[in-house]
Length: 444
Image (tube, rainbow, N blue to C red; front, side):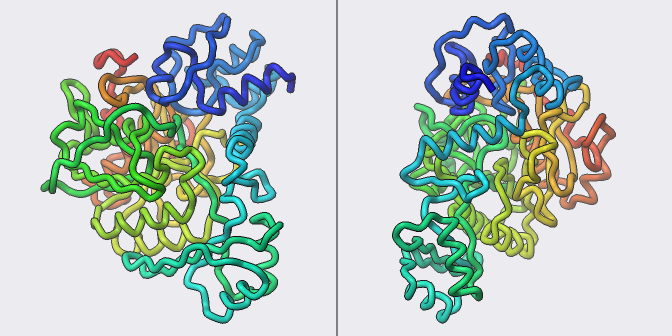
């Protein structure tokens, strides 16, 4: 890969957008200097894989443009153009996340970001925990999650050891402990950078069915005015984000022609980032699941992706055992990328996206199983504060499926309303009529 391509890739992966674009407003990040690209950028969707404004060669630009705006090209066309594939972009994106947060984040040895030097333990036995402390591990947190019935202990690895080295040592001296990395999870489309907007205000107890979401914080917006929204932070105080606001609007928003798929529902928002892109840890997600479980929603939407993790898997099992369904996005790193979680856990409703023609998005990930598809492109969602923007990605399909699941009551009933699509759409497309055409709401 050339130095220019790599530099542009890393800049894009960091979440930047062309100056003045809707992307800068949705993502809440500093814009890049204007690039002289022959591709028109004003109509590119801001969500989905970070492929915008990336390459300088005409062939690569054509491949990127077709991948974003049509189904005819996939990762192989990008690769043929000389550009990095979606899989390579994923590697670079994660590499940049680690590089820019070295004080708190490191690699697990396979390029995946984890909390630096930290391990997480579920329900440790006293003997195993004592053996760990004797060889230099330090307990930094010991919490009993009464909502999930789990004890979660965070251990700092002995001085000089990475998280990877610490896990290897821990498995040797205390094999009885259920230990794992404290992995970081990412949004499955768009950025979670905080934005300068007030949080959506809590409007008191609602009367409709309850739905939860684990994401970034939700900003105030006219479509969310008067709604029953309660937000809680699990990585500091909740902070408004473009991604969280878009997801919330697709769930319960209503303003003129814009309508979410579950407008009468109560929304419980668990912010696992607190405005910090290097947050979203497994332990934060588990705490969020515990709080949401207490609210007794019928469905929880998770438009985040990451690797398998013992803590997250156990927490989701407990939530599911209480009759709470979980819907999750499959990600946007292409079918060659590893299966993403929590979408790939048994029983979780794995969601992919389709365009306006009912065609599966070529950048959609390949989960261990695929349940349903919903609109994930050629659609609008709310911008923090006011207005709407175009979004693209499986992130934005997941809340539509979650909303329909809320009213259908079961995946079987949801399958009965699913319609055929083109490509990998699981049991079919649901909520096809939920797509809001960007033009009718003046999306930027």
